[in-house]
Image (cartoon, rainbow over all chains, first blue to last red; front, side, top):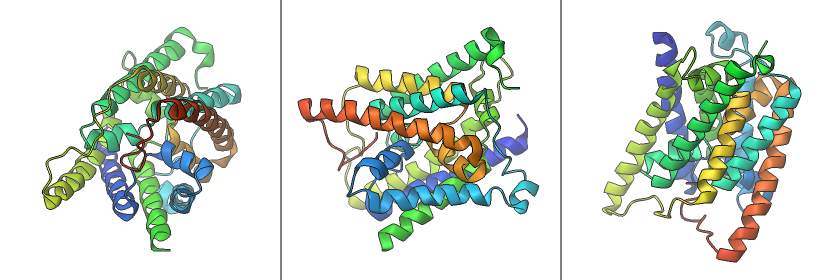
Amino acid sequence: MTLMEFGRAILGGTLIGAAATVYWRANGRVAGVSGILRGALVSRSERTVAIPFLVGLVIAGLAGTTAMAMAMGIGRPAVNAGGLPLLGLAGLLVGLGTRISGGCTSGHGVCGLARFSRRALAATLTFIATGALTVFVVSHWLPALRAP
Amino acid sequence: MKATLSAFGAGLLFGVGLLVSGMTDPHRVRAFLDFAGAWNPSLAGVMGGAIAVHGTALWLERRRRGTTVALALQAPIDTRLVTGAAVFGVGWGLAGYCPGPAIVTLGLAPGHGWVFFATMVIGVLIGDAIGSRRDSRDSRDSAAQVPAC
């Protein structure tokens, strides 16, 4: 970890906290991305705010591909972590798990913890634990699955 | 219209925050989860910064309203919450993407971003179908109050 990385993490977190506040102030909803994705897919009433939020996320990603973002080192293109089948499986688990538990890193990890929710704390500790266990198994026991 | 615009602005700001923070870099995310290896704790700052800002905003709002009632639903910690979070964590550790960064990646690196996004959508729909069946049974829907927490 470099000081620069840590500084950027805090700055990025501050922007995320501000964005969650804007979203909550404007329509009274929690800015949990998995919940917003669900709203865009299945809820007619939530769609009017869920879809613009998701479009905003994608456009931010496009902005990350610009030369300026690259020069600042914030738009480093993502690299495939371990083959397409594994990526597909991971997506399925992320979608399924966040909907069963009712939140993801943003819904539980940011919005829930900012509300001192015990449920959010339990969920956050659980997904960090199984995430760490998965990384441990993949990188230390199954090196074949490791990122190239 | 105003709600639509502010939702778009919130999404844009949220996405820029994810980019700046390093959350859209799956290697960094996996390094954050690699406690037994070359652990890189920098991403803890993301959660710290976001909770500090959003928590303060919520606290100010509570004080303004003059209420001492907690904003979080005090529902019990149940098997469903923990099981779902455990399944999510496995997917997060495998790919290094959680839902927000995965959607930002559609703009950042659309090629393989779409694979993860497509299966994530399928997962959300399956999880929602399971959830709504259970919801109609025990009518635990309090989404209007505090969804997703």
